[in-house]
Structure formats: C-alpha cells, structure tokens
Length: 251
Image 1: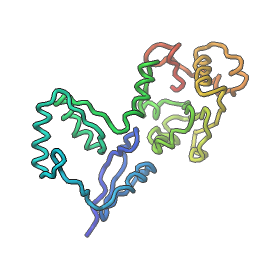
Image 2 (image 1 turned 90 degrees about the vertical axis):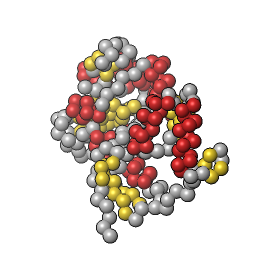
Image 3 (image 1 turned 120 degrees about the horizontal axis):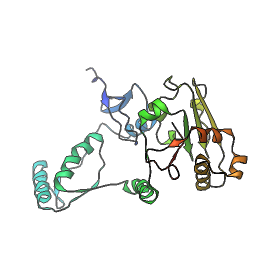
Image 4 (image 1 turned 45 degrees about the horizontal axis):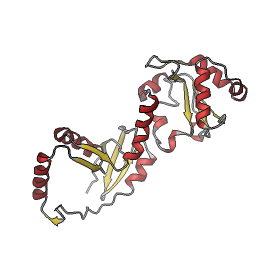
C-alpha cells in the first residue's frame, strides 16, 4: 500500500509557525519533506503510531464520547466565563478552539502561559515595536541578535527571512553577546561578527540605544567596533515615532 502524499503543514512547535513545510506519514509515524526544521523534527519524533488510550469521562466516571460532549455543551452554556486550560494541541486544534472560546466568553490559559507573560510584562512596562518576516526579508541590511543566536529556538528563521538570497545585496548580522553561526559562513552577500557585551546585557542595549539616538557614550565608542557607528547612521525612527525610546537598528 502506497504511503499518503505529503501535505502542506504549519508547525506549532515554535513561534515562527513555519507554513512552508510538508508533512508525510508512513506506518503511523510523521516526518518532514522539503524545507527542514530541526525543532519540528525532534517534536514529531515523540509521536507514536499507537492511538491514545484516553477515554471520555464525566465527573471521573467513564462515559461515551457523545455523552461527554453533551455534558460539556450543557456546562459551557450555563457558564459565565469558563476557563480552557492546557491547550496541548496543534495549530488546527487552536483554530477550532478559538471560535468556541469567543462564543462562550472563555479564558484560554496554555500550559506554557508563564513564559508568554514575559513578553506581555515587557510590553506593559516599556512598550515594544514589532516587524514581520517579509519586512526583514526585503529590507533589513543590518540584523542585531541580542544575547544569543535566535536559531536555537527558531531553526528556520534564517530561511524565512531570506538570508543568503539576493533580495538585499549586502546583509550584516551582528551577535551582541553571542557567538557567530558557522551555518552563515560563505553565504553570498552576508557578513557576520560577534561583539562582546559592554557591561551586562541591559547596559549594552542602553548604550546602543544612546548611540543610535546621537548621544555620546565615550566608553562604548572606544570599546565597540565600527559596526556601531554604522548602526547609528542607518537607524531610522520606529513606527511609533518616538526615536528616543524606540530606536530602530534595521532598515
């Protein structure tokens, strides 16, 4: 019997939500074809061909699936603000859950919610600005990775932003406080360098923001190489229009 043809698939295993992957299945096991993603491959390896042994229950007592769905529907209809916890599902499962949560006024709390709150707290405290993969792919000639390379958590990032492709003639990638990546060596039009921190990570980013804003930071200017002065020449105000608090280092 021939194995099913690979199908388009969106990976739920990192924040990139890579949607250019092809998922194949044979003998109950999953694999990727086409562009690879090490993180997705590792996650898929945990899935086994055996079907789940979990059975529906109501108040701890075994029940049929239809009975459990009926009971759940009744309880949701009677609830003012239900809580959906865990959310151990894939992208299709999350998309199916969303309209149900909207219809019932539910709160969704993922098992990894504590990690997600770090970004929300930073947004509440200082504000933030974002970009898109397409913007980076088509425009960024300078990319500054603060603290470490993003590839450890997002293996497909460089592919998604077009590193090594001729969309931007020359790209410079700077790792502030982290090592360079051997995988980027030799790519056409790509240079990379590692820059040591000046103090701790907070001090280094604060000094960089000051230099981008045109203020003098003699110690940083002496210690850091020419890329930082180039950075200040390239910088433009962010979309929020507040150059002092939100300098942009990629264009």
